[in-house]
Length: 212
Ligand code: ADP
Ligand code: MG
Image (cartoon, rainbow, N blue to C red; front, side, top):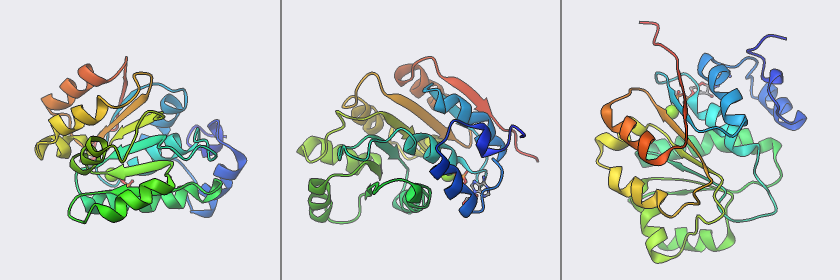
């Protein structure tokens, strides 16, 4: 068994079977470096170029510990745009096929808030959203992050470019201190270090160099 086999990880048989069904036969380099760290519960900063499989990396890590019987938000993924949030939610739904009825909801701006509030009343295990709209739901009291286990900052460099630092900070202020925080980025500008030192606990860093 090589260290790039998903079966080298502490994952359920159902998860491994689903990954095989998706055609994911081997871990990508960023998955092989980050999954052992994340599955131990450690905070992580992962840097790898676009298209390297970062979504499945954090997706597998956040889905594995979910409790399907608790319909509160247990994992939150913050993304820079609605398009990216939709792509992440789509990949998470494919990865969650192995699990019992996991509900994944997107909360992004640019669409009316009413239907989102109605969906939140039914509960969701995982929320994928943009910082501004998630912050709006927290202010209105239509979303609670009291039961959050995992926070993912996806495309963190782009979120900082778009001026989301304060919104991210306000969202994080509403999460439990004992959460796991995972930060994914293609580049590592100074703001990322500030996010890490302010909001992460002893994070391990992994980096996969671009080939060119
Ligand atoms: P990134 O976020 O790093 O830009 P994505 O998460 O969007 O990259 O993944 C890029 C593509 O790779 C997606 O189409 C995804 O389904 C596919 N993929 C991810 N992990 C694997 C894997 N282990 N084996 C094969 N394909 C994979
Ligand atoms: Mg990505």
